[in-house]
Length: 174
Image (cartoon, rainbow, N blue to C red; front, top):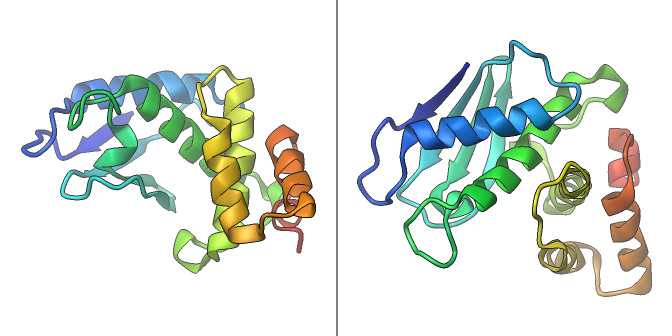
């Protein structure tokens, strides 16, 4: 079951039922997620930024700023493709956190920015292979900002983007 908060929006032209539908469709495409997974997503419509995170995995609580769900060609309007990419990334992170073989990553609040972007690249690469539209160069730039504009950093980026079954230690290089 999916729950979306708020139920009605004042600052953006979003519909909670549409967000829930997209989240449910994305969840159905993520292998390894429990079929009976209950997900609550909190949309912060006061912030047009794109920050997102997993607040909890028991129960699953996602937090997204409204810009992460926005249609870039129609400001303040819901963008289904953007929402699907965002939810794919977050639900892959949830799947990783639920998998004991992945390891025990710190909470989102405790993650370094470098580790967070490494994990995001790993998730977005897998999401691409699941059929979600992801703009790969954006995440390469984000990765370089945290890991350096070097051939070595680019090689790490490609390793993460193309990987399927990494552990937390392999994601972070630690």
